[in-house]
Image (cartoon, rainbow, N blue to C red; front, side, top):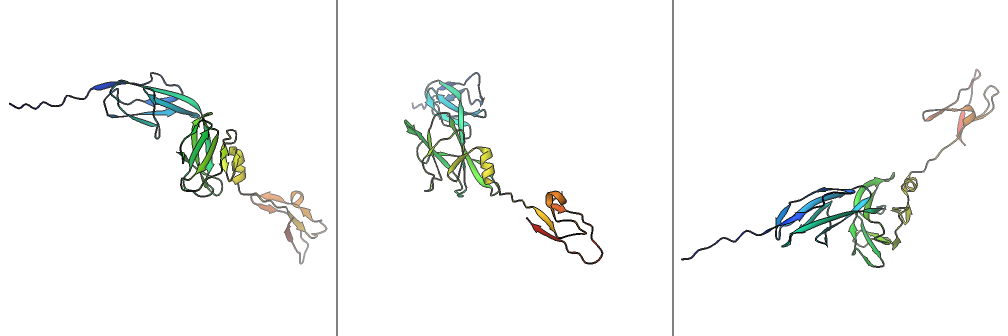
Length: 232
């Protein structure tokens, strides 16, 4: 007699998530999983923070705030800590189309070409794309922005007080906007000539601004008169 017995079901193990969340929100995954199962959950940091996430002490790297690990043959405890973040920005005035951040300190680096930076939007009258990268404060001291395909900046010292890098220099947001703004050109306009004995008058003395048009009122004598407006 030949009897075939089914394989016993794989053992399930417990997954414990943090009971309280400080400076982040959590959408927990399953409370149990079989050995070898892929387990995912979502943890989103508050603005100005990044997360250190582990399972049983093993680091997990998130992808768009989703964290995934393979279930071991043991119960799992998820640990999440929110730490204050440094955020840096790269303005892509060279039209790379993407940006990476290779970062390091005296103890190590994040592996060339570094972490992919997130597209934030566009900035300035030329609508340059700009990208951001966030990491734990103090984790790195130096950075190279690059496109992963041969184009890169020089070795840069991280500047947290001026976090926007554009065209070889660091700026604050307001400084960056001023740098990228189209130059404003203003003109003074004059009335020249003599009108019934009136002397030539400068814009602020004899002309008024109506919308985008400067206007002046003069009384003309009978006959031919010449009115000339020139840029001062």
